[in-house]
Image 1 (tube, rainbow, N blue to C red):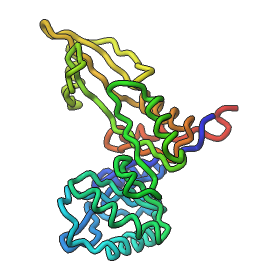
Image 2: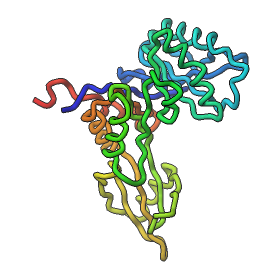
Image 3: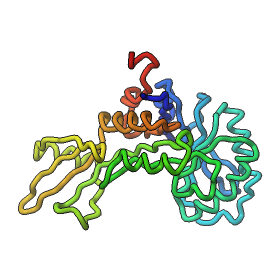
Image 4: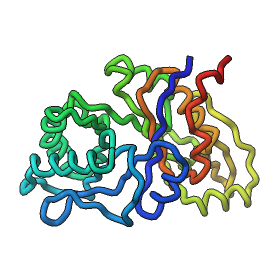
Length: 263
């Protein structure tokens, strides 16, 4: 049974205006730490309200001069002013752990819902957790099941990152390389490969030969994202996030099915 897992469109900068025009829940990834330790909004101001506040650490190396209560208070004020229902701490820099450790007790105290990357779960036990969607080996379903056994399902959210990666074959020891959109489309035009869907990885792939070398290309498109979202819904995950820049207006195809869609 599919749940009504909300899908948030992640947008920043110039993407915010067209993203909010889709009338879907939006994560405004537009906030970071200012030079004086204050909450700072980057990019054009948006008149839209609702959704989630997105705070990214912007490569922060040390928050030792940070006043957590001041920053958390500013986050609470901005959530109230813009009617944000919570926030995402997109913390991946060297000081990500320190930042989450400093803010999470205050966010808990003030009952502000928030998400952190799953790798920081131990530092914010009351948060919701972002699960990366990229997978290059193993089983996508097994990955979700393992997380669902460890954490409350309603506090898990799928963070969909569009993957496009090339591996040399055999690829056991090959970490692969990221392909730009231009390089990906060039390969498709030049080799006209036949693509297949991997049920295990929940992604599409094709192979091609270049001289004596054989390559394996694993990638996402709207159909694979829809499949990943549907699997997350079947598991009962609490939310999902999709980057607007990856799919543009096609993000509307990722809306949860209507309540009577299965009738």
